[in-house]
Amino acid sequence: MARKTRTAKTAYADNAAKIAAALDALQKRLDQHTSDFEAEGSKNWGYVGDLAHIAETLETLTSEEGC
View 1 (cartoon, rainbow, N blue to C red):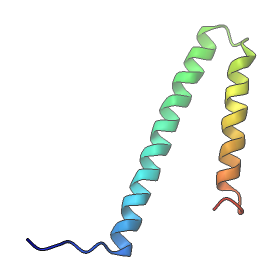
View 2 (view 1 turned 90 degrees about the horizontal axis):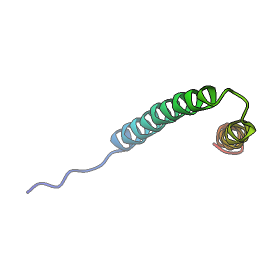
View 3 (view 1 turned 45 degrees about the vertical axis):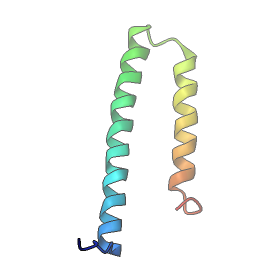
View 4 (view 1 turned 60 degrees about the vertical axis):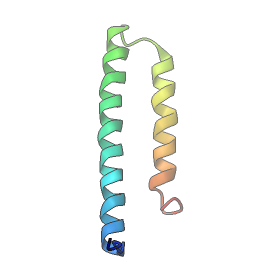
């Protein structure tokens, strides 16, 4: 059986697809989180803390130092 050689192009595409899937999942979780926050009357500061933590983490990931 012939062995497939992985190229930089296919590895890049695989990782780009993983990132796109993770961003899609993150958006779905944000949508659900927003629905839950609104269902509780939009007064629970715990939800705000959740998003602040995630925003900080994403800022680190997307900063020049993180990429």
